[in-house]
Amino acid sequence: MIRLTALALILAMLAACSESVSPRAERVFYRGGGSASWGTVCKLNRRGFLGLGERGYISVAHVTDNGTPLVGPKDAITVSDTLSDWSFLGIDPAKLDAGDYPAPKRDGAVTIHGFPARDRDGEVIPGTLYTDDPVPPFWWVELRDSDEGIAAEGVIGGISGSCVFDENGDLIAVVHANGFSDIEGTTGTWAKVVPVRDAILQAQGRGMPVAGTAVAANPPVYQEAAPTHATAPPVYEEVTPTYAPPPLVYQDSAPTYATAPPVYEEVAPTFIDPPAYREVVPASARTALPPEIMPAQRAYRVIEPQPPEIIPAPRGAYRPRGIECTICL
Image 1: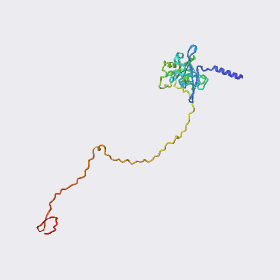
Image 2: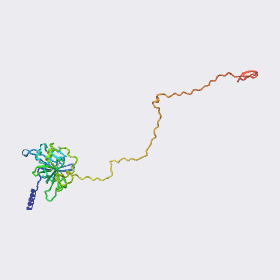
Image 3: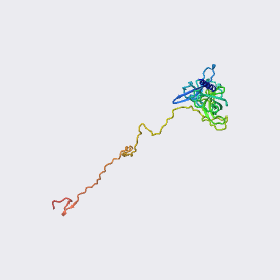
């Protein structure tokens, strides 16, 4: 019993020594369509009478676009911007004062409070503001590790939307992405963040660029050089992890058909005698009748009648020729 009591005291002392996650960071968990995702939302420190009134939340669009979380605040999205990747929930950003949220300052110490995937206790990651990104409104934070002798491990899925607090405990940004780039003199581990001040100004139409306006067609390209604060680390975009069943493996096989395809057999060509045509007199020729063919006329020869030839009869008598004498004188 004494040993258990001593162990409980030791654990309590260790817990008291370790930095706890801010109550303004709240865990969100989404599930649907065979996938799951995690993230963090930050409670805004909106001022009001005796600290009362609407507070609302800020996070990043690629987290809140998952819909209504199963775990975490279920406030509806009021305004969001997928390009600059910020999202306001449960409050109109027109009611917010950008001056309540300090602008990032180079070399300023910060801590990131959030909930990695499946982590219900949260995590606090120390870092240093390094430089602003060529594409506004983003900034880069050089990450460190709270454990001595261990290199900075960076942030993993679920830390997106986490709260970035400065040394005074003021909310200054939310986490957009994680990056790794070896720059001499740094830990080489980075977090890309969205300043809350700039997100409010963009939502109110007073920031540059205006919310929803494309800033650059292509991500910036960085050339390796000696480490300076003017050199920005390359851009890495954190993708919210999704967990889905492993893809099915298909085996190549011959295609099957619900009904067998038709089989065609090549046969010898068959020919049909061409039709006989009868010549027809064209219509234009039928307007005039063909010439009538008359029968040939018979030829007649006129013979003049000749007087009968008189042949002298014997003994001086004359008688017509051809007449036989029956009585001879």
